[in-house]
Length: 183
Figure 1 (tube, one colour):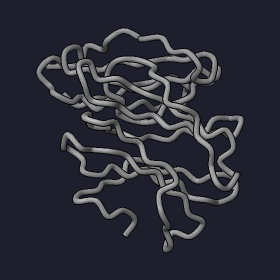
Figure 2 (cartoon, helix red, strand yellow):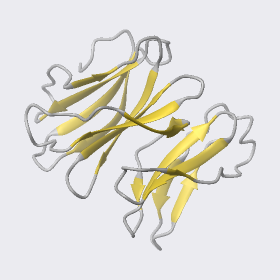
Figure 3 (cartoon, one colour):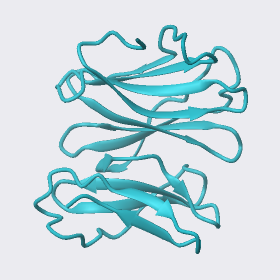
């Protein structure tokens, strides 16, 4: 057992260079009290207290996707539900340090993040996002996640009728970036 909330769901995990496992856990998911906890452990059988709790008074927090950048920094992407939903990023510049130190949250765009970013061959980051009013699209960054640009909404079947498109990105053998999305 990692977390002790009334309902929990793992969101994402990553292993850092020191063989520590970082795990994101959505707590009280699906409720207006939803929040995110981040855990770190060198032993899959032993988990201590969370090293980071992401919560916002009166708003649900969803997602919790990790990205380990080429410089070794650990990035965390999540959504604060609202009108509009807002995507935030936090970074741990040195995830090998103990205790870990995280940056303040930075709003990077409107929408709902549904997975970790994918890096293209040229180093650009692409973050899969969806919006219940518009459908799936990406946010892209050419500076390692400091600034983001919204891409075009993808024309998937019935995109406007799907409440959550849950887009995912992948890189094919030819290096081409593609998106799959629920419709």
